[in-house]
Length: 105
Ligand code: F3S
Ligand code: F3S
Image (tube, rainbow, N blue to C red; front, side, top):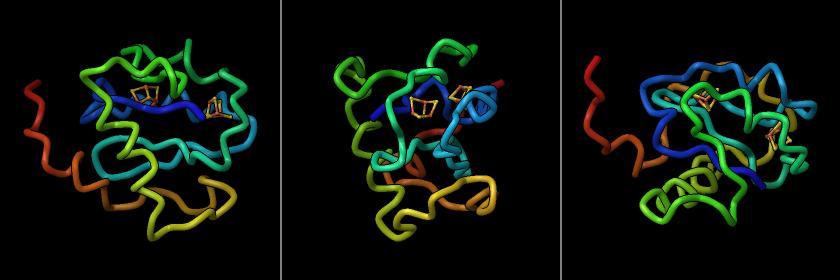
């Protein structure tokens, strides 16, 4: 799977959503999350993110390893809806993300 990391927090550019052929990038409150079981590793989302927040799971920088966990945890209650567009924005975040200080600007 691919993972969305810290640069997405409080930015939510959403360019990535347009690229995903399986509609597996879900909008949370402060960032977006890739569904680890629904992502088919096509990689189309990675180059379009203007803040370079998206990484292949094995390539997530060490300082952002908690975001790998967060991408999985976000779906603990949600399960596998099989499509983000029909769900829309989810006003929740993985606990680690919710606890991050707000970004300035
Ligand atoms: Fe976030 Fe980048 Fe997508 S900022 S919403 S991962 S395009
Ligand atoms: Fe979609 Fe990106 Fe995975 S475009 S299939 S979330 S690698």
